[in-house]
Image 1 (cartoon, helix red, strand yellow):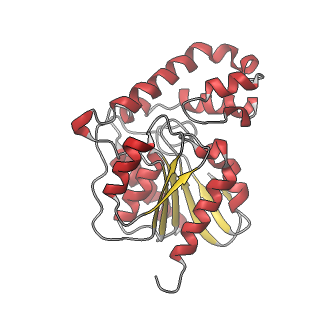
Image 2: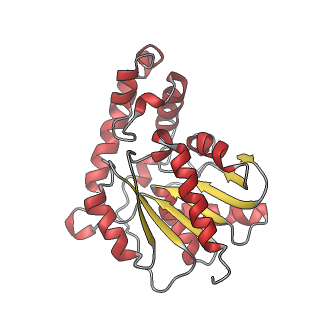
Length: 261
């Protein structure tokens, strides 16, 4: 678990195949104003063991249990991809003061292929990672190779250091729950009412969950949410612009703190 700073608690939830480490740079921007906490989901590298067949409900249950262990009733939540979906489900359970969902998963449409399009892209990336892992420390020295290797996750992969790229790939390859989580075809149920202030912040150049498909459906599923496009970013915007991500989270928290809420 990563924890830093003082102030209102903000809990950060990562995407499938990632870990708490994906938030490291964003934490640096948030910790002056907040008690920032990031933890790793079950079945992911460095996290607890996941039971066979784990799905999103199991990931949400673990996150809620972790909030209980930390003594956090309704913290502010931010999540990317799978983590955004988990944050929205926690809000539905009444466990969030606010949610900043960054390109959340689950907004696909089962009637037109569900999760299969993003699944193909993620699996392709994992196959490439397995084939090239032996040479990655050498390949990662090239900015062009970092951009290529992270092309599905980031618009500016060269902003990652060689060591950060190796860590990103090792997290992906070390995710024992990926097989189960990438087979599900569940989807986010529509929100009725407004459990807390919610921001849907979609990456402008998201190649995994494209804004024109998944983003637009997300707006229909969560109609009361504030909509924002994260300019110049890919599916994992913390790689491209952690300062922008942190500011988007801060704005969501500020809306929740307004006296008229």
